[in-house]
Image (cartoon, rainbow, N blue to C red; front, side, top):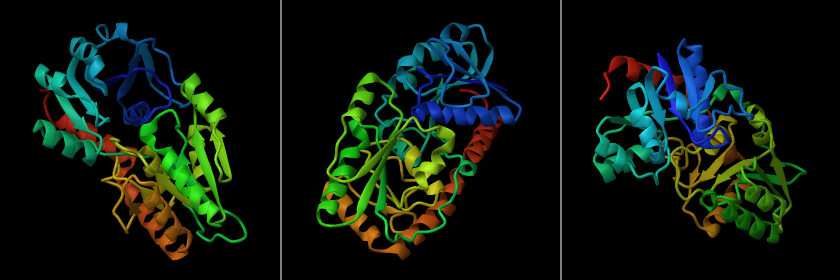
Length: 327
């Protein structure tokens, strides 16, 4: 099959990464995969094995199944020379009504969060294309002991997007540090705009921290293995890439339910919390003081997240496309 996706760009975003990961696997399995963007620029942070082309080629190429993640590209999707047209729903805030009105577009859900939202709001049964993470690219944590060093709390440092909730984790760690806990924060991000870079450059905190920038994506395991705990404070999300990556490294996780319904079983594969600083503080404190719980959660998470490997997801998508006809 010739598969393709319409994307706004090829910068480091979760929705973009999803299709670069899947695209490489589709290609490994003997299919072709093309990324279509306004300018046709290839990603610089990811070793993508497929082609990237400008939008002008959407009517020239013959495509068996064409995906997009954004409503604003409905014209490109519906006018392309494609046999099947699919909205892969990855952002819970996206309005599906334009696609549903069109009638010729299939809906895929990237997580149970999205699937349940779409069923409740639109009354539809989206195809469950849940996942994923490249578990082979991450090294599992070997020791949960913390002795004669700070306890390292890791969080995603995308300061330019308030929805990520980094400030909640920072504030919780600041309060614990003020109370005498020997902790250190570890933040990471690759700035995607001048504003984002400025926020990183000007970031300060009253707790010791390291802010890792522009780390090679394929070596993210090295960052996660520096941490003792990963904390995610997102307000809403489709699929939480950072939580799945942390779990692939056998890190204990504290997170909201944003993008984690498939991943986080409270008390078993992580600790679930609501988006309040004092709740993050309490749960971080709990894990600082309980090494056995950290190990239990981390190892359970490591086993569980393997169910959502990109390869398993790619197989489900291919089976679905080969086994059913288009709308």
